[in-house]
Amino acid sequence: MVKIPLRAIAPPGRSPNPFKDLPESPGVYIFLLGETPIYIGKAINLKRRVGSYFDINLESKTARMMGQAEYLTYILVSSELESLLLEAKLIRSYMPRFNISAKDDKHPLYIQITKEKYPRVITARKFNEKQKNIAFFGPFPSSTNVKSVLKMLRKIFPYSDHKLGRRPCLYSHLGLCNPCPNGIENLKSEDDKYLQKKKYLKNIRHVKAVLSEQFNSVKIELGREMDFLSKKEMYEDAQIVRDQIARLDYITQVRMSSEYYVENPNLYEDQRNKELMELKNILVNCKLKIENCTRIECYDIAHLAGIAPTASMVTFINGVPEKEYYRHFRIKNAKGGDDYGSLKEVIERRIKHLDDWGRPDLIIVDGGLGQVNTFSEVLKNNEIDIPVIGIAKNPNRLIIKNKKIRLEGASLNLVARMRDEAHRFARRYHHTLISKSITK
Image 1 (cartoon, helix red, strand yellow):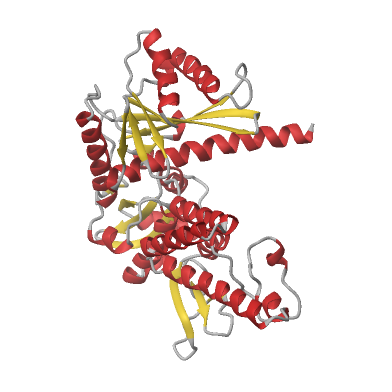
Image 2 (tube, rainbow, N blue to C red):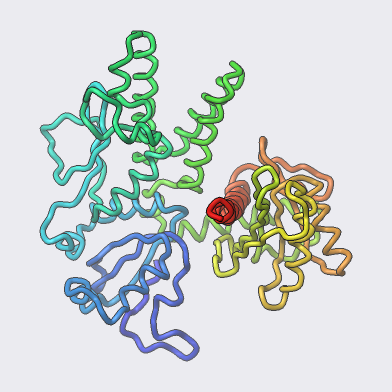
C-alpha cells in the first residue's frame, strides 16, 4: 500500500490535495497516525469520498480525526460488496479509535441470520454468544453500510425480516420476501408448503454463502440449477435463476475474498494487469494488429421492440472504468430495431470526436460478426486504424476477424465487466427516454 502524506508540501506538477489523484473506483481507505489506522471507511468512488474529508465544513469528530491523521492509504477492490466486507474485516482486526467512537458510543451493527423455522435476516447491535443463530456478520461501522449490503442481496435472494404472521407481508408484493413465510404457512397443500419452504431456505443459504464470500460456489450451484430447469423445459424458472446469476455477477464482479486483499493490498492492480495481459495475448495470437490495450471502448444498443433506441459507450483505461469518458447516444436516423443501422450511426458520430474525446486502442462491440463488420467498415472507409472485436454470450467468446475464441479466466472477467457496464449504461438511458415518453 502507498502511504500518501496529508501535510506534505506538494511537489511541482502535483495537486496540493492528495485525494485528487485517487482513482474513481470502489475500495477501502485508511487514515493513519504513523503506522496505526485511526479510521477505516469504504467508498464506491474513492476519489469522491476521500475528497469530502478535505471540506472546510467538517463535523467536529471528523475534523478531530483529520487533525490527527498523518497519512492516507487505500486498497482497491472490484465491487461495492467486496469493499463493504473488507471494511468490516479490517475494522474488526484493527479497531480504529474513530470507528469505535463515530456513532456516539453506540455498538456497531451486525447482520444476523436467526435460527428459526423460517430464518430471518436482520440487523443487531450486539453479538450475543448465548443466542442461537445460523450466522453473524460484521461489525459494520454504520447502518447505511448494512442496509446497502442487505438491499443488494434481497433483490437477488428474497428473504424475510419479520416474525410469522397471518398475512403475506408488504415486501412479498414487491418480490423482496418471496416466498413469504406467512404465505407459506397459509397454504393448504402440505406438498406446496414443503416446496415453498425449501425454496425459502435455499435463498437463506445463498445469502449466508455470499456474506461468507463464497461467491463462486453460489454461482456454480445456480448454474447447475438453471441447466436442470432448462432441460425440464421449465423456462420461466430458468430465467429467474439466470437473472440471479447476472445480478450476483454484477455486484461481485471479480470474485475475490477479502483475505486476499489483506494479504496483498496491491491485488486489484495485479489482477487488472493480468487481465489486460491475457487479453492482449489472445489478440496477438489471432494476428490482430494492436500495440497496446491501455484504452478500450465498449458499445451496446438498447431498445424495447424498436422503441426509444439508444446506445452507450463506456471507456476503460488500464482495466478500470473512467466514467468521465462515458457517452450516451440517442439513435436519430436508424429505424427502431435496426441494430446494424444504429451501430453505424454511432460509430459515424464517434469518429468526429477522436481529438476531443480521445482515441481508443481497441473497440469492443456487444454482438457477433455482423456488428463487428459494421464498425470496421465505417472506420476503414474513413481511413482510421482502430481494431474492432465482438463479445458474444452462451458461451462467452470473442469475435476476432472470422474467428470465435472461447473466453475464460482473467480475460473473461475484464471483457464481461466491460460488456455488462455498457449494457447497464445503455439500459439506463433507454429507461429514461421511455419514462419521458410515458409522461408526455
